[in-house]
Length: 335
Figure 1 (cartoon, rainbow, N blue to C red):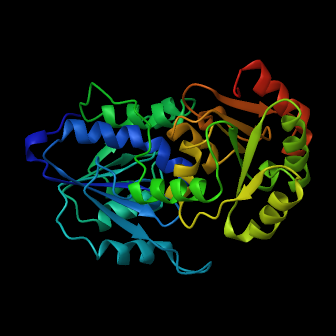
Figure 2 (cartoon, one colour):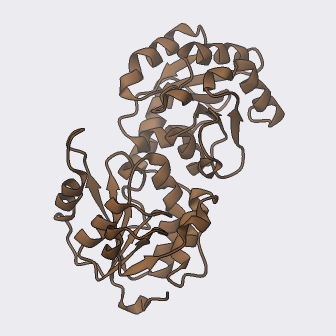
Figure 3 (cartoon, rainbow, N blue to C red):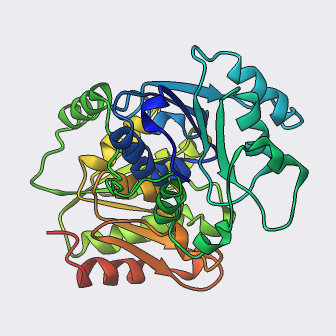
């Protein structure tokens, strides 16, 4: 269904969940900016993924939902977040290539005149929240997340999409990394390799000891400075790794996701488990080796050149340091 673009002045896009979800939505957001150049675009995001697009040129405003506790009512929480809105929305797009009753509620709570979202094949009472329903969304189930979202918004008459997934890194984060490099005399003469040791999925969490083995075997073949990054909950193990490798290695403490993105962008290679860090590597065009269990669908694979995936067994502990070295050598990822 085509809509009158000249009548759309204020757009709300809802994109929930994690870092990877937001990065995969960047091409869709850029496409909307191209199609509605004069519109004011607001994104409703979760605290867990909002930092990826904070200050981005392709949006105008950001509403952030913060979970109030494990027992908090999400419906009420999103309603309260929407009370902070500064505008009356003409169009709300719930950005998911599939039905969600929560997203349907959010669309109605937004007060937007046009409410667009996927509806299920079997009738659900919450689908009445949408007055611009998108049907047969299962046709995009096998597509990559990026492509599924682009196909989803084509249903409102958009013909030319933007595929650019690049993250716009804040200058303050670039400066933070530059200062860190200068302080520790890190230069381009070495290969700069980032280990992100954290992962929110147990099956994709590589042991610290395996990272240590990988540092050793890579140093036998290349001149490397290792930068260790982690979530705050894994800081002790990450710091210990940086101190015990016996190699040139430093722990990088990143207060925000944009700081980690700046670090990855300034490095030659990122090694991490499947998840948000992997998508950041793709979003900053840094060669990345991501370690996967066999449990995740291919629609979440990283985009771009030199984005390599290692899958082996049902848990990443099946992947050895030698497996990582082989991928690096076969794809000329280091000099």
